Image (cartoon, rainbow, N blue to C red; front, side, top):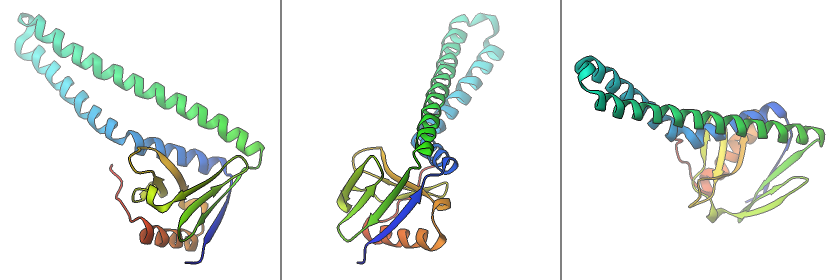
Length: 179
């Protein structure tokens, strides 16, 4: 296999979009479950008040506590997201000032990532099947829920994007992203 190298100049908008996609992919299960928990808590709270009225202070207290817990988890989620995006904006500003450029080389045995600060080599065997979420390709390590490499369709030409997908299909396979 002929090594395929792609060079991606830094673009603030694409970087922030990719980071938002990483956040959404990482927290998609949390969001789904807490939407369900919050809806169930709200329904239980309303039914307990309607059915029991003043007679069931303990039931209202328990269900109200559960609803309060769900709302606090949402507040925690929003706080984490705000801090994450604030940090991403700081990094984006620094990368923009440094004219940051990254390159990826896909060869027979490994994937290389290189930028002005870092140089990584990964054997194909360390990756899970790749995922595409919001037009961004994510490569994650096995046994770790962490995205190692991610680049978007906007950053590559259609030809490069399809060629990279073909290489990844042959080397590690594809896994549909959970929603």
